[in-house]
Length: 416
Image (cartoon, rainbow, N blue to C red; front, side, top):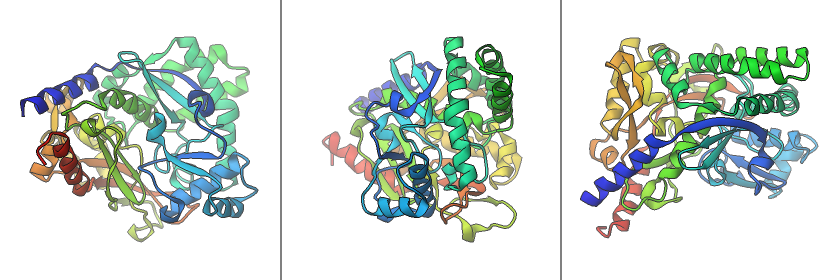
């Protein structure tokens, strides 16, 4: 027991000691040299085309056309079914992606460097809400937006960030928590704070006033812009906590629309999976739970570092948005997550809880012992390819992942 507690404290120390800095936006092939032609990185644990859900298939079809690997969506589907593309999880390449999580060589990715440990993590730029590729959208408008992000927005952001020397993220998130964000389904404050810091360097480095205006309008019109930054930050913080013998702390939670998977510090890169659950939430007009796909995305990395559903008390406004009850109930979600975590994060505090730190370091032993599953705030994708987002809600991580992980963990400790 003493060995486990010491290992868990080391995991927590590494999570809390990280110094994530947003340093650049560059093409994914430059950030990830092993990202080859016709290789598609996706959200969640590994999955074959035959088991993929509708929105994941829709996104793959769209990204294949975007990259020029298919003539149209039907051609892309045929090639995918015939093994024409290599599918791999983002997590295997130091990356993360929201919802379907598409990452391919031409896409611009944000680069977050953990300056305490020297590692980097990557995430594509947030497209906005509605019919977007991360929710399975793949029509001409979706692809045109991605091309603009590749050709204009990505390079502009890269020049601006290099001009600043990097943007520290921990203090920005600390401020966002005091302004009503939880960094998953509510990023209004942090997106605005980020834009405020980017505006001057964008103006200094923009190639034209039209380009500057377009970039500012896009970022300013997207309340979820910061989500992808927070995700890359979460990945940069959790990777140094991997491969710690004797630690029962979770280092990743992720979903591919079919399976939910977790990784644990002591068991390295092994995935423990179970069928993913259906989100419960609020649907956009014209849609209902009959249209919903089961949960999907790498975005639960923010819950893995104590944000999102774990920081709900900081964002009472989001409770209604995700259909989780009354604003007064927000603190109850955060208190429940405190039952399954190692300790608080003193750098990220919640005013409504007397500035208590967000609960950090999910312990698989505590999850199994209490039966309290991690709460994840999430968007809801339509179950059919090409439709896009239809709502937002919350979802619970399946307990079986943690039960299976605990058995494997016990084996590593020689007590199974």
